Figure 1: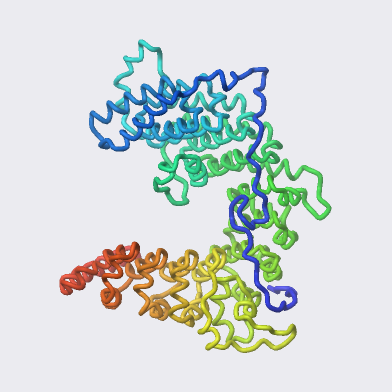
Figure 2: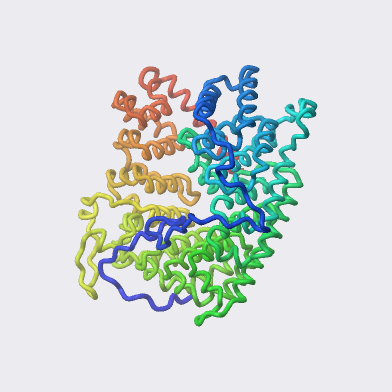
Amino acid sequence: MGLGPRSPHKQGRRFPAGGKRGRGAKGSGRPRPGRQRHPCPPPDGRSEPAPDAHPHLSPEALGYFRRALSALKEAPETGEERELMVHNVLKEVEAQALALATNRTGSEMLQELLGFSPRKPLCRVWAALHSSLRFVACHRCGVHVLQSALLQLPRLLGSPAEEEEGEEEDGKDGHVETLEELVLGLAAEVCDDFLFYCGDTHGSFVVRTLLQVLGGTLLESERARHRGSQSPEAQKAPSRECKPTDFEVPETFLNCLQNLSSCFLKDVAVFITDKISSFCLQVALQILHRKLPQFCAHLCSAVIGYLSSRNSSADGSPLLLFLRDQTSSRLLEQVLLVSEPPRLQSLFEDHLQGQLQALAAHSIANFPLQRFLDAITTPELLSPVFEELSPALEAVLAQGHPGVVIALVGACRRVGTHQAQVLQLLLEAFHCAEPSSRQVACVPLFATLMAYEVYYGLAEEEGAVPMEHQVEMAAARDLGEVTVLGSLLLQHLLHFSRPCLILQSLSALTGPQLLTLAQSPAGSHVLDAVLTSPSVTHKQRRPVLKLLKGHYVALACSRHGSRVLDAIWSGAALGARKEIAAELGERNQELIRDPFGHHVARNVALTTFLKRREAWEQEQGAVAKRRRALNSILED
């Protein structure tokens, strides 16, 4: 495969760090989408009561709920006293639910109180809000109460139905709907006014949370967005990492999810072009991809079909216009991520082929292109894409879109092809391919996203023969600031089938330079890749990790370095553990006083090592034996 003509050799290039992933990130090239929007008037001539018509929360009531919440937090987690306290507090909540939900402080407390609520009291509070559902759902405070109520379902749907014992009590007050009925009722009401709820700044949050609950999947991005609206106390709760969380839901929920998602098909043009409404369709695609993949494919077909039917652009498919649009490009990113390989292949052949370099250079279109590259899983698709993009790799970096390059390298890692070619292109782009002595400097260049001349401050004239790499000059220079994208690039390269060059470059660093890498928030993950990559053997790791000898205390007393040291310790043999413990033991008191070091000291059992060496060796030997047995089982 020919790589085609390369861009002219540019002198002294610092590659812009590029936009961060995520909406409206600083330097992303995308303005933050506006979320302030005037609510639409209710359709069908229906009117909502003015806000002043709703009850207000008195200072006395606010004080009561504040004290009650504080008491609940301090009470034992189980027992009759707690159950009675929860019952009494939520009874008061039921009487003033609307006033609490629409008060800023009250809504924050109500969200926390719902976290304590058993199933039946939650249903009563929900029922109390139902008569003013539209007002609450589109209220800047009330919307978060509804979200909190919906987010209790993973906890309550799986709980025993012990609260149903008291159903006969409800005869006096009338029937109280079950949790399932309340969720389905909310879905029906949203379905009736779908465009209104999806287009409202606050109401769209309810739609997105409802879609997740109906599908039995909570997306990390939406949970994080919701936590941002909570009180400081609630935000301190530990958050789960990245992956969506699944939970069991009744079959009626999945049927309702499909019915609700069908509403997108009626007005697909609105959901493609409207900033607020588009978020709802993006969430729907993620949920449907996991739970109803056939309907997800149908929805994707509707989106692509509509966009493809618009007026053609001068330079190709009409889809290209929407890839460059601030709003529709975000939706297309999600469509690309949930598309199956055959659809991605046809999208490339029908719309994207011949346009990849132009898309990579565009300030907005480079983001959906990154998602397209992230979705590639077959060599049949990667080969023509690589053929088209590879000649422009240095130009794309210079334009400040390194995310495209990292996504292409990630695709090569995932598919397992074109790895040697893309590494050679990277060396050329960072001006360290020739002379060959420069190749050993590739790690600091990739990590900082700087070309060789910029990183080492050289003033080479254009056309001059590049100078040889000076080892003394490299050793005397502190490691530059490691970028997030630079770290991702190195992690991908370390997972290539042959990461020898990257490992040689890491081994060429000085101890202080590798220490700086390990202590960096982004750089520490490069060391994680060295320790976890199946392509890196124990023999290849040893020269890299040996550089950290003499720096274990500095590692242990660093937020990110201590995590790296824990990972090194976890995989170390008994002899290596003795060396680490001996070095740490020389400065035991310093470790104990350090907020990170004392955790490392405990993990290493440093006190035992210093006072009862024989017992420590027996314990560590047993740990090593168990680890070897486990590895043997996993390898089989």
